[in-house]
Image (cartoon, rainbow, N blue to C red):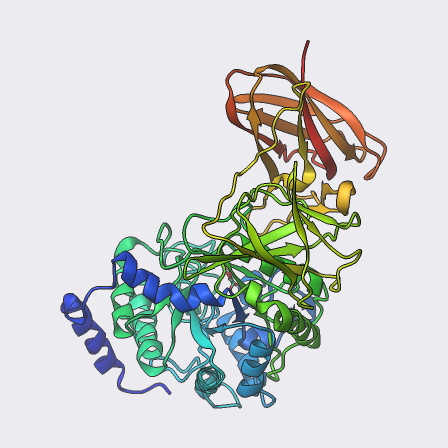
Length: 585
Ligand code: GLC
C-alpha cells in the first residue's frame, strides 16, 4: 500500500540515525558472536527461494529466450519499466502454500529458509508503504507473500531470513544498475540519484521488514554503488532486531556475520563463517526451459563437502508464478531428505574435517562435552573391504555404519587406521561411518611426501580445486584409482597441491594428462618458480600421456605448493590424473 505515511516513515528513519547509539551497539565480543551464530552453525543446510515477477516471463521476453539467470531478465533484455511492470498483472500465485514449502524444506533436512523480499527488479513480496511496486498493490493476488512463510517457518521450527537487494533496483527511480553509473539506466523512467533512492526506498523498506517480520537473518546482495557512507544508512537499522544475522554483501569488503561464496564450494574452506549458495539447475529465479538439474548425488555430496570444510549450504528453489516449486526441485528435496533422515547427525552442528584430503570422500566432526565423533562420508566405497584413515592417531572406541548401526572392526596397521567394511555400502550416494574417539583428537596431517627415490606423486584425488564464482566448476571425476580432474572447460579454474620435501634438488615435472586437439597452454608454479608450456595433443579426452612440463629446483625442505593454471587464450579442456616430480640425476 502506498500510504501518505511516507513522510512520517522518512522522519522516523531520520530520527533513528540522528540518535544512532540509542539502540545499542551490535554485539562485538567473541562469546556474544558465538551465541548469535549458534543456530546458523548448527543448521548447516538451508533453502534459498528466489521468487518474484520474473517467474512470469520465466526466461522468455517478446517470444525470445533471454540468456542468463532468470531473475535478471529485465536487465538482460533491457525491458522498459512499464513493460516489465505489466508482467505483475500475471503474477497470481494462487497455488502458493507457505506451510507446504516450510514442510518440504524441513523434510529435506533444511533448518532455515531465505526468501527474496525484494530482488533487483525492485518488486516487494510484502506490502510496502513507500511504493506500489509490491505484491499487494501491483498484482491480482493482492496479498502479502512473506507473512505466511514467516509463520509457517516458525511453526515448523525453521529459522527465516529475508534477502533484500539494497542497491540494485531496476524499477524505482535512482536504484543502482550493474553496468551503469549513478543516475543512469536503460529507461528514463528509472534514472535518478542513488542517494535519493536509498533514502526513499531502501532505508524505509529495510525498516519495514525488520520491524514488521520476526526474521532471523538479512541477506544483502550486489552492492553496486554502495560505499561505507551509504552502508551506514542501512547498517544501524539492524539494531531494530537484536540478534539478527547478516551476510557480507552490504558493501564491498564488508565482513558481515558470514561470507557468501556463490555457486562454488571453496577448495579448502574459509577461516571464518561462510555459506555457499547454489542453484539446483542454472538459474535462481524460475526459467521454464532450464532443465539442467544437478543430480541428488551431486547435491548431497555438495552439502557434505561444504560441511566438511566448515560451511553452510544454501540450496535454491525458484518457484513458478503460480506459486509452485518446480517438480524436479521437489523430487530432489525429497531424496536429499531421505538421506538426511538417516544421516542428518553427520551434518548438523558439525565442524570441519581435521584431515588433509581423503581420497575416498569427506569427514565432518562433532565435539560435544569434550568427546569427539568423526563422521566419515564414504563416496567411493573400497572394494578391498578396508577403509584407510592414515592421519588419525587417536584411539577409536567405536566404529559403526550410520545407516544400519552395524559395528565395524578397526585395526591399526603400518598405514594408520584400517576400518574393515562390508564389500558394498548400502547407500549409492554417501555411506557414513561413525567413529567415536577416546580423549582428545590426535591427528597427524600427512601431506604427500617424497618416496625412497625422491619422487613426489600428486594425485588428482588430493588436489585442491579452485573455481571462481559463475565458472563451470572443474571437478574430480572417475572412481577409485581412476580418478581424474575433469570438466575443465573454463580456464579460470585452477588446481593446487601441497606436499612435503625432504630431499631438495632439481626435479622434472611430469603430468599424466589427456587433451583434445588445440594445444592448451598452462602455467605451473612451484614455490616461486614458474613454467609456461603448452600441452601436446594426446589424441582425445581420455587418452592419457605422461608429458614433461619442464624442470624446477626446490631449494629447501618443508611444505611446498604446486599450482596448475590454464591460460585462457586458446584453452580447450584437459583431464589430469597426476603430477609427478622426479629428481633429475
Ligand atoms: C547474484 C545475483 C542474484 C542472485 C544472487 C544469489 O548476486 O545478482 O540474482 O540473487 O546472486 O546469490
